[in-house]
Image (cartoon, rainbow, N blue to C red; front, side, top):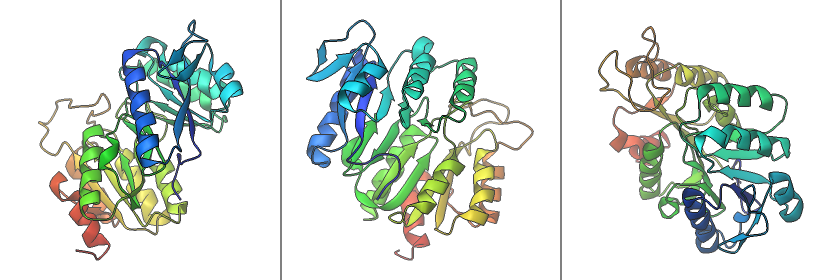
Length: 298
């Protein structure tokens, strides 16, 4: 099993006729053919005013509603420019798609606050924005991550950092553990799905043996997740916090990486995680090894 995406996922790409949307839609299709046996494929694209065209063989529609009705798409992948991306998310949610993955970087915070309010009680799951996406190895690639480094396995991955997601995946593959599903949640101040939501999904997934959580300086989401996991997660949990060498008082990396009142420092996050039973590693080079040790396999 897995969470969020699998071989039954039918993806529509909003912004498929743009440079980034077209390229990555093609990469998702390539992953479907080479690693998922044709499952988890892109079935539609959406660009207003370009309905009736094709993008590398994928039919393009003017609206998400049209694409869903004609193709049975059940997930949206968004590559729409920042000024219009919030509207694209709302359109996907209003079309009753259960999963929306927004890759777009630079969406105004005010727009995302509106999106979050609009999504209340919709039942939809939003991953991102400003994220690499979601992948279930051997099932479905829905984002911009390099598919070939992933391997079917038993570890769930939740990460706020895009590049560190790829690093930990490569290490887990090297350790022979593989992954059930990897989720890049994005590093913006306002995002759709947080750590606790995904910890709950992985805890309920029988195929997931353990979970790794990668965080960053800024905010208190990692501490909140660790405290929740202490009471609600029975599986081994490994953690790493990026930004340990960030100079005090300086904003680093993602827009959400802002330290306030000492609560968002790497040291504070790591302290709370350790107190809550998380296997914390101080080095990004040892994330995979730390997981193997937590499972008694190293």
